[in-house]
Length: 280
Image 1 (cartoon, rainbow, N blue to C red):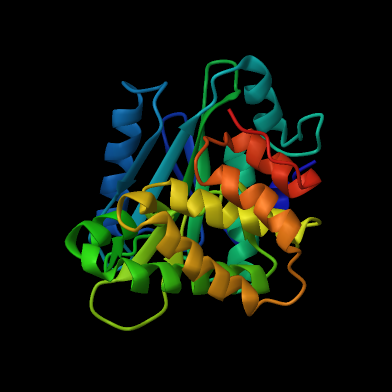
Image 2: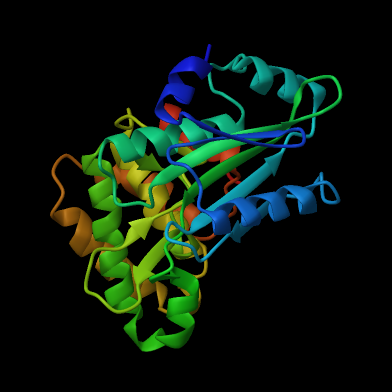
């Protein structure tokens, strides 16, 4: 059972607009309040769609991610803070808990500024909000690559370092691709990771297979358009040779198929839990 009291103690500022309640770590600026109210108003007309958007340009600009809950059972579980039968929470709560824990461990990521929910007429959670600091001095990885296709090798090597940084914090990101990487526009600071929905805040029980999937998935999601497979394999070989304890057999069994086949988000969890890759 998820303790809502514990969460609210970390985010003590309550912002209410209609049937939506948000819990924030700091009082929102006037600009942020206006942006939040506008977002909530828009959500009334788009109840069934996911949304991600920057909110304001005030002193603490925010980025909001809103996820609707599409089944009655999911609404009940999220409202009560109860996990599914497999012990995991529904995706919005998973993302909130993973993001909070990754921040606590000092992972390279935008700060979690708050969370919240909209209730329906029965008092059940209809949609969930996650609010992070807007990385307004960063650019999303795919956009950066469109402007810098000749620097794809540098991007890949920096992405591998980011993945290693997360791993050293025992954060296993199972949706690690260029679109979930943020690059500083001007400085030489390290990259940052976003979107911790499909993530585990623990070391993988099958490290080699999980790493093989992560690096294969990274190639499959867009990078294959910018580099030959042989050149990417060479970069991967160099990277894993410097890592202790990698079983090449287990790594390859996940790495090679995940470079070319779709792996759903539930199947990615199975890679982490069992070391088995299910594609299709």
